[in-house]
Structure formats: C-alpha cells, structure tokens
Amino acid sequence: MIALVTGANRGLGRETARQLLAGGHTVLVAARQEDAARDTAAQLGEGAYPLRLDVTGTADIAAAAEQVRERFGHLDVLVNNAAIHYDTWQHAVGADLAVVREAAETNVFGPWQLVQALLPLLRAGSHQRIVNVSSGAGSLTEMTTGSTPAYSLTKAALNALTRMLAADLRDDGILVNAVCPGWVATDMGGPGGRPVSEGAAGIVWAATLPDGGPTGGFFRDRLPIAW
Image 1 (cartoon, one colour):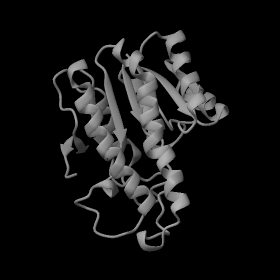
Image 2 (cartoon, rainbow, N blue to C red; image 1 turned 90 degrees about the vertical axis):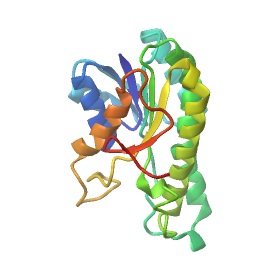
Image 3 (cartoon, rainbow, N blue to C red; image 1 turned 180 degrees about the horizontal axis):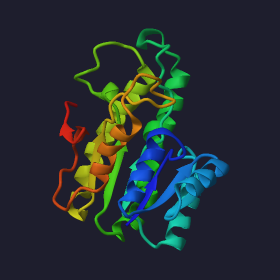
Image 4 (tube, rainbow, N blue to C red; image 1 turned 180 degrees about the vertical axis):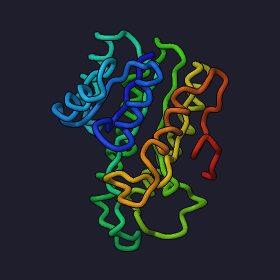
C-alpha cells in the first residue's frame, strides 16, 4: 500500500507516517521544505520516501502527483494533515481576515486541490482511503465561542469538503473521513495535550478501514462526533 501524508516532517504527520510504516505501508513523507522531507524520511527508515510539497502551490501539487505516478503508478491512502494558524490570539469580531484567507489556502484549498490532482492515482489503487485531519474546533456543535476563528472556520469547511467528497467517491469505493485527533502535545497544540501517538492512532485507523467501512464521517478515537 502506498500512502502520502502531508505535513509529515513533525508532530501528528510524522507520527502518522511512522505508524503507517509500521503497519506495512510505503509512505511518501511530504513537507514544504525539501530538506525537512528528506531528513524525516531518512529518520523514519525503510519504506519512507521524501516528497517536497507545498499544498498551497498548484505547480507543486502537479509535480508531486507526477512523481507519485512515475515512481509508484498509483496511490492507496492520502492523509491531508498539513495545517496552519491555530489563532488563539484572535476572536471573530476583530479577526484579521488576511490570516483567515491564508489559513484557508492551506487548510481547505490545499487538501481540495490535492485530492483533485491525485484522484486518477487513487482510482488506480486499491483499498483507497482519504483522511482529512480536522479538529473539534471545526465542529459547529462545539463552536460556542468566537476564538481561533481562522482555524475553526477552515476546519469546519474541511469537514464540509469531507462530506461532499465522500458522496462523490462512494461509488468508486474510496472512503473519505474527517478525524479529530484531540488536543495533542505538538508544536501547534502546545504542551499539556495527549501523546502524539494517541492522536495519530485515530488517523491511522481511518486510513486503514476495511472495505465497507464508514465514509463521510467525523471521528475521534474511532467514535463518531458531532458535526
């Protein structure tokens, strides 16, 4: 099985790549900087391949898709993990909309463009899964304050995209789900959260669902959570 994980040079992305490798996948370790992708792949070891990929760049995405096609000919798993701007310093009423727009480029349009570019390779694969790494901050049910507006709004949009893609790809047998890893102790999440391995486990679960598994859902620790 061939998997591609974005933002795989640190935190949840790196641990997700590590767990997929341990489960027997070949993993494309995608990062914005070539050195970061290469160093991470080398540290993860056999079966890990570096891939320079800025998900906000159309040319980057096209080049990455071509590299996957040339090296492997197909793709089985796409984990859209890369994300920016956990903007705890803002509230919706006074938010800097330039920050919101920038977040949308990475957190929403990046995964969307990547799915579109990689879809022919996914259709050529087997046991195809798309996992959008989301957050409870994007749950409309849990959104009771105006804090982290860029992050919350873009994760809510990613959830909506998950639903639409799942409906479009159901007949192809491609399962598409959103996963909240919970509050995890990463550079973005900050200290005090759960171990990264626990957060990544739910992502890997969605990436390795059996045929006939759920699609179009929002999960935390393998259990459905409210949109």
